[in-house]
Length: 97
Image 1 (cartoon, rainbow, N blue to C red):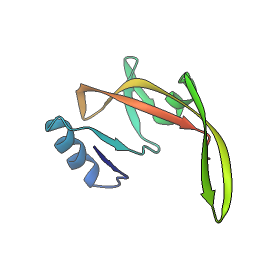
Image 2 (cartoon, rainbow, N blue to C red; image 1 turned 30 degrees about the vertical axis):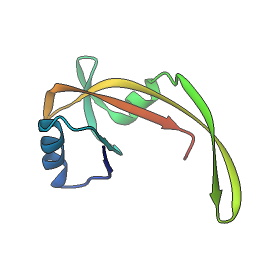
Image 3 (tube, rainbow, N blue to C red; image 1 turned 90 degrees about the vertical axis):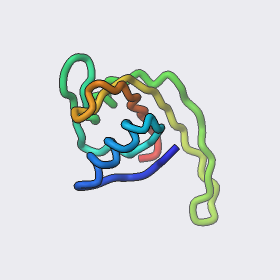
Image 4 (tube, rainbow, N blue to C red; image 1 turned 180 degrees about the vertical axis):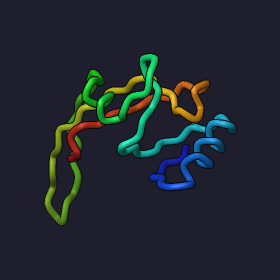
């Protein structure tokens, strides 16, 4: 599975390759539109509507201090405008800022 952040001209080539090859991938979406529920929607609008079905606490070290942060997460099916034939999953995680 590939994880990364994309910007600019690489986005279309990235999606074309990974979707064309049937590969799994994770990207961080910011300010993008996706196809969901029969139309185009902004990612932030969908995130507000998503039911957070799971919650947990994540513990991590921040500058030598242990931090415990509650997080919740959920997912919904979406499609990218340039690949409407391929159903993907938008995963929303709330709690890290």
